[in-house]
Image (tube, rainbow over all chains, first blue to last red; front, side, top):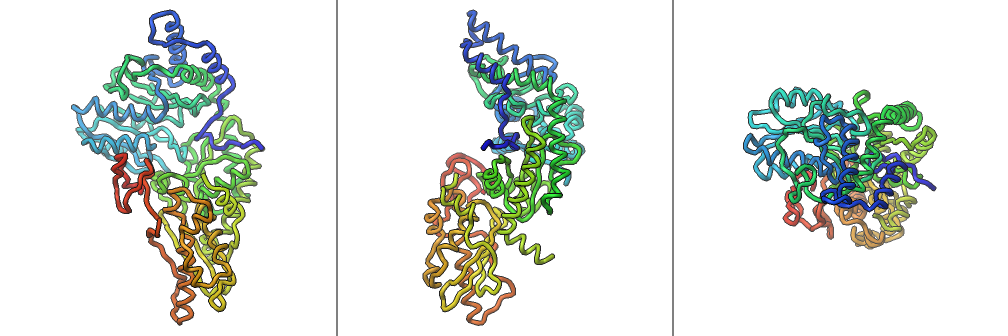
Amino acid sequence: MKIINLDHISANPLLPEVKQAMIEAIGADYGNPSSQHRMGERAAQMLEDARKSVSRLVNAANDREIVFTSCGTESANHAVKGVAFANRDRGNHIVTSNIEHNAVIRSLRRLKSMGYTVTSVSVGADGRVDPADIESAITDTTILVSVMHSNNETGTLQPVAEIAAIARKRGVLFHCDAVDSVGVVPVDVQDLGVDLLSFASNPFYGPTGVGGLYIKRGVRIWPLLEGGIQEHNKRAGTENLVGIIGMGKAAELARRELDQRMAHTAALKKKFLDELPNYIDEYIINTHPEYSLPNMLSVSIKYIEGESVVLMLDDENFAVSTRSACATGSLRASHVLLSLGLSHADAQGTLVLAFGIDNSEAQITAFLGALQRVVKTLRDISPLYRRSAAEG
Amino acid sequence: MYSKTVMDHFRNPRNVGEIENANGVGEVGNPLCGDIMTIYLDIRDDIIRDIKFQTFGCGSAIAVSSMITEMAKGKHIDEARKISNKDVAEALEGLPKNKLHCSNLGADALHMAIKNYEERRAGITRPEPVRKEVHVHREGGKCYCPYCDVEVSENTTFCEACQSNLEDEH
């Protein structure tokens, strides 16, 4: 039986057109874009075509502002560490939020061990950063502000343009981790006013193993990888041309189909939210009702634990994600959910759903039925549910 | 990730529920990792005639609970007391390392329930079932760095092997 993917935040299928472009690229046996001969020239042309397409997706002023990387994590590492290293003479302080992806959090933790200082602002119960908190955290030694575009656990959108304006006013560089947003909602680097923006290809149905980093012209940044002069001297190493061609194709399609995709997934999300009360009770929606990705939803189901839910739903042929501590290697409750004020027990029962263009309304109905069965089975086993029922 | 036996006990947990007039109840809980297990015993002539469990937790926590009830059922309490968390993990054909640390609480809950039975028999009453909220390490319960899988000591906040900060992780 085919597994229905409601976990598009973890993996997206390749679009047929993307797959085709990549197969053709493998078949064409392109050379190295850095070579001087015709084989290299052809490869360089493909590389620049892909760059143009990706550049258009985020509306960069110049295609040269796009650097291809190996993934969103590399982009975020490059932005945060590269700016910190290159601007050490100007200061050593970085401002961020409590709900960033580990690619940013752990990069900053590494920088802290090297003498940088970090101020991390809390989010409100609605899961959003208050730009005023960012402003008051900026000091004379601040060199970078890094706040994500949408949160990877809740899908809640952050007030990026406001924060970017504050950073600009204070003369501080601003990086935005937009990995879960680019190609999913409109992201325009010029409108937002960001200096650096991280993204990846897979969230918009391109291949994994390719990402991008927008670096506004004039930003002082060091490369993470040193070697050749690829990517305008910002990232050494022979390019993953097949992957990049796939990303370019996916970017072209995402730009063209964005409105249609958003409408499709938003309708699925609405259906799920509208009908959920008919199937289960006692849950908490962690995603902002208005400011959130159209395809994403985080729900904490009381008295049960997420990994158990994921395993049982897998038996029912549905793929979903959880943010329970038990399901992560670290066995710690999610920092994002705790930041929202959830208790450890409630955070344990958190499912992350990310709908995709390949999902249908009938699948949502079937999923709600499966979820109802699984929740009942697990609550029947749970001592917390019994206790709560006994207490009335 | 999980063995076939773990998945079998997770999918078809044995002895789920509550014993209404249980004469021994034990609960272990680890609110940070999240697993909570309650064991109910019906003991007559020091023999475990019936045993049931309720568990809030991940796949391995449910499988461990199910397995311990199977292992203890029908046993004399002196025999049941000898069952260790390690025995349960072995009967389940192994558990992932990080779950040994967290979810393998079945024997603890059983021992707690037997202790509760003995206390009741001796006339000691407690307002609540015996409950252990603090996460302690049991025999064989070692800690591992979540990043590089190297064994680390209980209260460390730094993994020497991979230079990772474990403050928020461990």
